[in-house]
Image 1 (cartoon, rainbow, N blue to C red):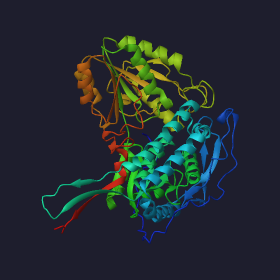
Image 2: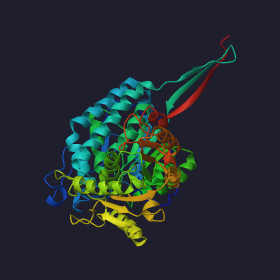
Image 3: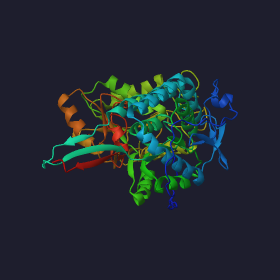
Image 4: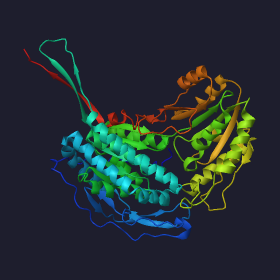
Length: 531
């Protein structure tokens, strides 16, 4: 995912000495952190931001905290200012780490069942407030309201899932070769986890990490993307209402200018034991280097470059439907979006023709609050410029624009859903992740050729292919160098499934029964002298 986390070099933070953790059994009441909500017909259509959940301050140790300065959060559809949010810096980040550390001893000792009960309460409050939470996402991210509502359901499902997984952290008893010994294996929480999340799923990327962390007995400090901090702060409000103890869930929003300093604290602070990051591969590598100084446990979900292969044996109509869903969800701004379409020569022309018809018929560009909109704005003008650059490069090398190809008249951050044909592997759009509504189609001849193109990338998050040949399905599924494969399916994310990639697409897995392991350490206990 192309999270906009500043990729600056960080200097090491001064070490903070740890003290005795106080007992934190109840969440402290919040101070008033609300602010006047600004709306405009251009930016928010007929909708209003829900004042009861919109917060402007950081959330540290169960309290809403101010910062010395504030930064604007803008509606990407219009550029209108939605809010001024606390621009947290080094002091606030250090305070958040300290609060999380001081809460960790008590939280880890809470029985797993009780942790699960609190996560379930948080889940229930999300469902009760799902419409307001979705409006916040659409306002700050721009995605259509229907997609935002789907994200809230998806986001809440991780709290529900890990509420149940908390009770399934099992250890082991290993037979010993010595009669007077017993060998036990325990699983224990790693400690304070720093959670750094992107703007494209501003709610779900938090709960997928935080749900697992809290279920395991860890405490967290969340640094949301500067474009979309309001969702993280709304989750803090609901966590507090659910009774999540003070210091267990902390949020430090910050501007792009403050991101290097806040990142420095989270990556190098000796009291932080774990980093979980979703964002670009380039930024992930920087965080890995900084985490190495204190050998932190790290999990990362990084950039993708997903291939979508359509073989001659495929059902073309189903492949087109899957392509539409995989490519244009969130205007092409998801980490698992298809970035390269590879279509076998026997059905290439039919696929391109039907895909163009589907784009024209099914997709509608507009404000996310307007009924019927399927394509909202891109997050900012820089994202639009990258789509333009990829199209210009492809056309200059012989690609043809089948449909779309330019900015939409709705506004500067809107771009027409675009389909290119006559695309080659020399073009930028087949070498870089576009992160926008651009679908380039490459014609291929053989299965071997398709796999060679698909596996040529240095990343491997998701991959898709359509085929009705059982033998081919097994071969290709096993040979695609990605962490997740969709076979005759364009949407693969689900709470029950392990989400993550191979190569430079990251480390570890999120969601599923495996996700909680990222926040646990294994301890071996040898119990001797038993005779």
